[in-house]
Amino acid sequence: MNYNWHWRVLLETEPGGTGSYLHYLIVGLGWTLATALAAWVIALAIGALVGTLRTTPSKWAVRLGNLYVEIFRNVPLIVQMFLWFFVVPELLPKALGDWIKQMPPPWGSYVPAVLCLAIFTSVRVAEQVRAGIGSLPRGQRMAGIAMGLTETQAYRYVILPQCFRIILPPLTSEFMNIIKNSSVALTIGLLELTGRARSMQEFSFRVFEAFTAATVIYILTNLIVVLAMRALEKKVRVPGLIAAGGAPQAGH
Amino acid sequence: MGFDFDVIERSWVYLFREGMTFTLTLTALAMAGGIVFGTLLAMMRLSSVKPAAMLAGAYVDLMRSIPLVLVIFWFFFLVPYIGAWVIGAKQPIQVGAFWSAAITFTLFEAAYYCEIMRAGIQSIPRGQVWSGYALGLDYWQTMARIILPQAFRNMLPVLLTQTIILFQDTSLVYVISATDFLGAAAKVANRDYRLVEMYSFVAVVYFVVSYGLSTLVRRLQERIAIVK
Image 1 (tube, rainbow over the protein chains, first blue to last red):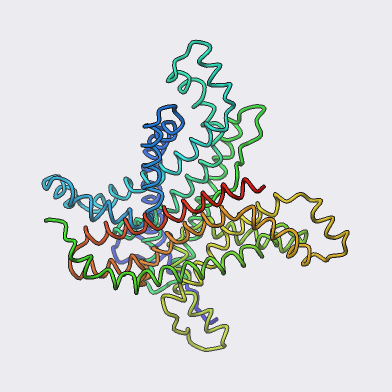
Image 2: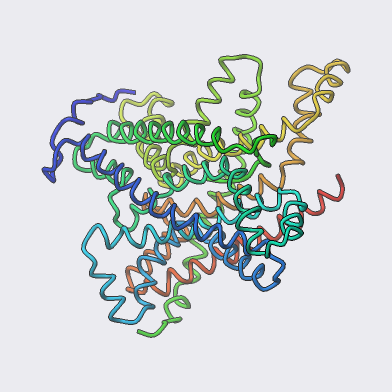
């Protein structure tokens, strides 16, 4: 293979004039993280709610939760991205839809991307929460009720706190997934890390330098997340329980 | 603007004949290739030969730490160079979007199938390996005749679930302008300016296929569980 590497390109100024290509990519990482973090907060909240609903005795709550999970699990992420970006603004009342469509860049892509990733990931969080609650001994809930707690209080003070400590490892991998999945937002015009690596390739014609740089940045980010989460896992591990590795799951 | 079913009626034959064929062929190829390569990777990872185990581990970790979209871009540009290197050509060769995607997804999904197969192999009691050796079988015979069939069977539901995810993930070839199901719909959508209709239709089709398949997998899982 005869490819002439030219690493100095990373220090050359990008056509937008904001700085070097390396700086351009780092700003991209900023957008990746800003998208992933905002979506993650929403995903955790919705996921915890839906996952809990699916373990309650109420048949309707379970059905509603299942419906939500099935809908957003069985449509590809990129299609959901297009639904949020192209379809949702058309279905809203005209004034609101126009306002969304006229949001200045990058917000016009950022907001749909965050919503899309949040909902997409909330389904996977919900699955983990449900599995986590299911893995707790039934006696925990019963003991809570026997002590005079209401159903809601039992969830709030007994079940959910333990559940979250148990499912932290799988949630870590979901968090890394949301960082990776945020790259799909480039299809609706958000210039996050992968999107910027591609535009750098288009401007500079340095294909492999651009993608190598992006790959290294992703790997470093992953490493930092893994190390931080491992420290957190150590701190919140429930004493006496074997860390929940759980059954192998399909994923991407 | 009313919902225009007409555009779907006009284009669905094209969508399925061109797009869905592309999507399904790609899924099938990547599944077959990914499971074979993934199983080999899993055997390497569990091997007592340290360099092999490390190499496979590094490969899997690398693939799992970068986004699929980036991997697709990587291979879209890399495959022509690899092809040139394989056949000894001086210039990068032309590779169509389909083969580029097929190679990408095979290599990418192999990392995920590997982790599933690794768990499958590890779930088999060690005694099975020892009894294989005691019967005079060598490593490959023990693997092929005793361990892998059981591992495969135990992991079948997870492997199939991963394949459903693969089926959904193939829609990302949109980024290299391939005409898969989503790509075909996007072309019609942009030509006729019917984005709402086409993307809603695409979502419904993906939902129906994925939901149908995952229901089948769930049933299979119950049957296997009873037999065990």
